Length: 191
Image (tube, rainbow, N blue to C red):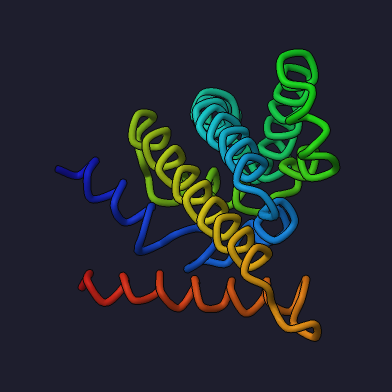
């Protein structure tokens, strides 16, 4: 039951983008097309789940025994940077069009505060290894949900037309704000 609660909270109530406002750069930058947004979401799911697994192991089997817990942030950043490089190499070989579509936003997963923030939060919440990976995966799926929803809305706005003064970034910010308000409504469900 605890797993289900964590998953529902991560997807809707504490959505990393729309309720916690982490990972906004790729959210706004890659949400032009649903296919690109789905690719970015998949990459984030892979990186975030694997990053939480590895950072958990690094923290509890290297940093804590050596008494250097204060090095968690820098060591977590190194782990995340390595994993993003692996994803980038794999995407370049397996899906070159997606690699091109993601462009600069793929390496920016390294500096995506959501990936680091969730790794730190999992340690702070004292989750065990399995719960940490479940939590990170659910958060990443919530990120994917948010970015795909945003991309779908932006595609529809392009098809239906937007007044000239609202095209581009202004309508994107308004849409993101409305989505955020909608997701914040879920927080009233939990006491």
